[in-house]
Length: 554
Image (cartoon, rainbow, N blue to C red; front, side, top):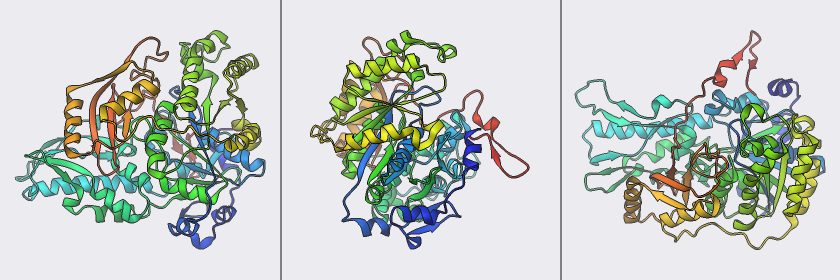
């Protein structure tokens, strides 16, 4: 059976009953049909004094193009904890339409461990991402309208981009205002994918409607002829944007196929944004559950680093344990095994590629000071010999490995890791630390991430990046955390440098200031903030049949 067939054959509980599992009642939620709901912001206020549950972060090795199953493992762990009698809850990101119609085809788990209703979650869900797209583009239209009616603020350079939640490389650079109307000013413009928009980051980092409006008003949208910044609040844009986002700010409640409550809210990518679900969702989950399972996008060099250095700082939280997801195929991939041979047994390939796993373990344990367990997401082609070899190698490093078979067995296939995580979260870890201090200069922050986490010998800054850093320092925003946009496939900024042997530099070609979200984005290598579709996109296999059932999402 396909993932969508498994999901459709499972009888879901009504969302009111899911809410009751974590102490909420019908008045605490706003229902979107039988199986989805928005959670009232008042719920967190009512639980503010309650002790937080344990926070489990799920991250991974550098992935292959199809991913290594972080969401699948996250769901399996949460279901596994329920299997052993623990009050667990999920706190995940919302899928973007870009990957759904691009290469991945969906992001709601797989097999027996999925969040549901999977078609809804993968597509329009409760409309959050559409609202973010609309708010982003409302601001863009207000900017151009202001210029049309005389440009009182004196825009000389516009830095705000439009967005759409699809992979469309044709929109990376566009020219707008070509209607020929007398006062319409043609100009170069750009599109980001919505999940890279600063509005997405703001929704994920805001803690209330008032905080949301303040952050929206603080968005830097351009500069005047004197080089002075112009902010969204000078266009009086924040109120209307907040109106579009009022429901998107509320976390969404759904369930797994085993009826574990799941809060899914916010969806920034980790390769081009900060890669974590919303602060509101995570903090609410910590009040509702005794064990909260959350994830950070792509490999630990991206998602986990940003989770710690950006989200943990801003939210005042830290993980009690980290699950590092690995697959035999990813280890072989980083050992130089060719794609068409990656399913064949290959101990030598594992030995060559295991350094990628070791580096992530070292970063999480010794750089961040976190308790780590490796979850091996088992695939059908993995052999017992390969699994035992990997287990022995990790035992030599003093790291525990748990074989997770959630895809095939559901929560029961994650019983082992659930039991181990309960013990691991009880271990006191006094060495938790960030990679850099906010007082460090922007170049120093980037260099610390590049050398300590990526293993690079240093950083090379383009003239454009240096000029932007100087501007940021002049404006007084150099104490912001840094969000590095980089390929997810390698520790380096080169997607083809999988083994990362020898010395390599991280090249920062541009710097973007996000005054609303409160961080600085550094663009490394050839990374793009608007992805493109693959040669054969998943969209070609997605369809709806004569019964109205969606097919092809996996």
